[in-house]
Image (cartoon, rainbow over all chains, first blue to last red):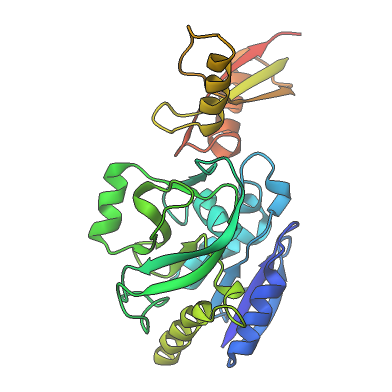
Length: 222
Length: 81
């Protein structure tokens, strides 16, 4: 199962994702550079990792969303390819229009770096199909701009389509309706502020549950 | 020609930075204030045959990159130099 991990200038979780997926086993991992425009059709998953792409200039993820490889990623996603954006990757997905809404400055104005609890809202996605709905995951967050904003009208669409995947139990950044992670209507694009790759070893292994779900989903596909 | 672009969070989007600065001003005794918002100013030089075309193109730049229409609004002015 071929997985591509994109490095933008300023990405700093690309190696962590690589390491975490490698230890999870069964994946063939390739690192991709933001300026390249490779053919993505033989990939099973594209990862947009966390970090501070382009130094968070203008808005977090704004510049990365317009980088050459993102045209390929958008094409890939529109054809149904699986794409996950973690933290800065989530911001890039929103900036590129692959996910609705936007991420703004945390209400507290603080950069928040701590372990938090999220509720898994649905098992009906490739990302959570082996995780029980309403269960809790312990995952770390580390961001200054993680306040997810969406209009009430668009939020009702998310609910109708089962697109809200993760919600904060103790809303640390002031996100609309505690949203910590969501997917597109088709469920193949997933963005989340918490870092599953940082919860795959000693402290918490809950991040691995997302990779396991993914593996199970991809296994059914092939 | 020069263009000056102002980008702000939309009215409905809470601006924590603006709110904090407003609270500080109030604590300093400036009580007759409200709705302080902090935005971004972008200046650039542009070279288009007419002011109208410059306006159109700068609007496109705002829509495509300089502002995020989900949470931000923008306005701009074109100045002859």
